Image 1: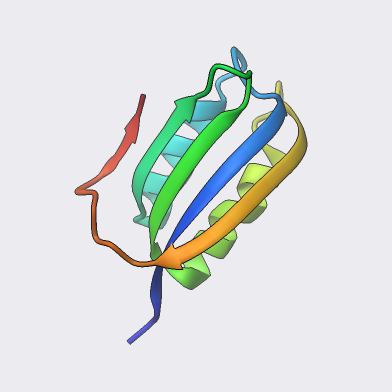
Image 2: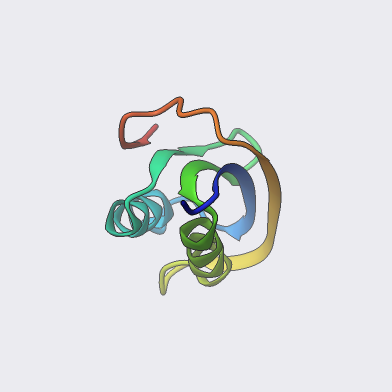
Length: 92
């Protein structure tokens, strides 16, 4: 069975007001991941995702690129033990 993990990302750059959270939502749903995407007060976006490590790695590669209107300057990631905390993927 494939290892499941929880990953928390902080994406920095021009990532608010450009459809970034919806982009993350669509990508996570396609990959079958659960979690959320949320704008933070400092202009960054927080993404928490749970699922198979291989699919989290794919999501990570998408987060680095972002949607066409975004300009990602940094994407920080921390991996944790899988918690099975979420039923689906949500936008906050």
